Structures are given as C-alpha cells and as structure tokens.
Length: 262
Image (cartoon, rainbow, N blue to C red; front, side, top):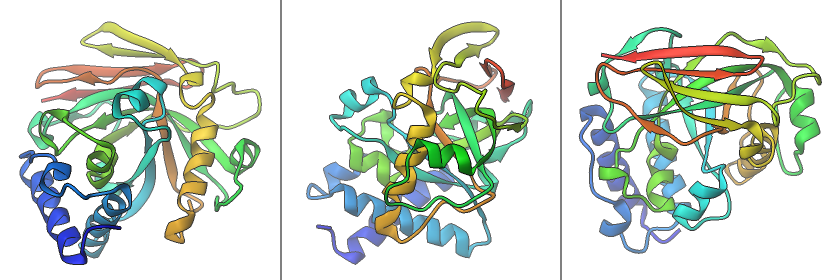
C-alpha cells in the first residue's frame, strides 16, 4: 500500500458520508494520486468494519468487472469484489426510493448460495459446483458514490465495487443439469427488453467467477462461508434507472425478479 492509515481512514469517511447522504464525491485517485488497488481494498474494509460494528450482517459478496468490455474500459485484466449486507437485500417485486442511491444502474446476474465454505487458493469450477446449494436469478443495483461514474479500478474497489443493492429470486436447487454458461438473461426496463446476454459472458462460466473470488480472498485471510451468497457478475450491460422506472431480470430456467424505483 502507498497511502498511510490516516489517509485510508479519511478516504473511507468520505465514501461513507457519500453513501449516507446519496451525494457523490470526486475521484479518490485524483485526490490521492498514489492510490493503488491494495489501498482501495483497505478503504473498503474500513467501511465494512464500520457497518458491521453498527449491527449490520455480512450476507454475501459481489463480483464486478467480469466482462471483457468492462475490463477493457478500466484497463484491467481481472475482476474485483465487494460485500453485501443484510440491509442491501430488497424483496422481489418491492419498490425502493431512487433517492436512496447516487446514480443507480441495474443488471441481471446469477446468485450462488453455498452449503459448504470455499477457501482458496486453488479453488476451481468443480469445487464451486460441489459447494453450491442453490442458484437464483438476481437483479443487482450497482451504484457509484464517485461522481458521474468516472472511475479507475482503485476508485470502484474502494467504493465497495460499486455495490448498491440486490433483488434475489427463488432459490433453485443446483444440479449438474443447470447450464449456467449457456443460460440466457433478459434485462427489461418498463416492459421493454433492452439487452440480453449469456452466462458465458461472465468469465466463461459464472462458477468461474465464484472460484476467482474464493482465491482472491486469500490475502485477506478469509473465505466464503456456508450460507452466504455470491453475485457472480452481469450477463449484460448495466442500464441507468430513474424514479418511476420498473426493472426486471429473467434468466432461463431460474425465473424472473423485478423492482420499481419510486
């Protein structure tokens, strides 16, 4: 890391306030030119610890930057990750205030629910499949506390990988017959299909993204524990939403989830 502990705390406090006030801030990498990805994860962990201390519960993880176009956009060659708390899970079909977010977008994903822990290094796709209890269609609300989505990799990592909230569908028991790489997703906004994609867009197979996460957590001395879920990455582009919009995601074989922004 290049930033001092006090600077990391200062940057974390800025992001924490931006989230609480739904008021985005400028790029952290502009304010702290030497900021690296390791610094960004340290900032992320400061805010996670702060929220856990306030009584929130870690229920899952999210993986971002799993598609080649997004990696190219930010000039990176691997995904990133963030955390999901109990307060970030929204009921299927519910309404949520648009004002809760800074600049929300929605994207369809597969969520994995684990019955066994996954701890790297060396986790592969087959271990992910063996550890998976069930999968579900999910709609992720991604949000940026960095103004205008002007991001570098350290910016989005520090900002909890641009996590906002998630809507989960019904859990479907996982079997080898479920072809997640070949599954088709449809993203709809106000009843109109705006994009489609296949699970193969997520590192070739959404299970590969989960394996990547288990291995990426090794330097933090942690694992994905049984009972937690993982948002594996978007099948499509992410669509901006405004108050009054209704968004839905459908994945073949897994069903549909929806959300309205009030």
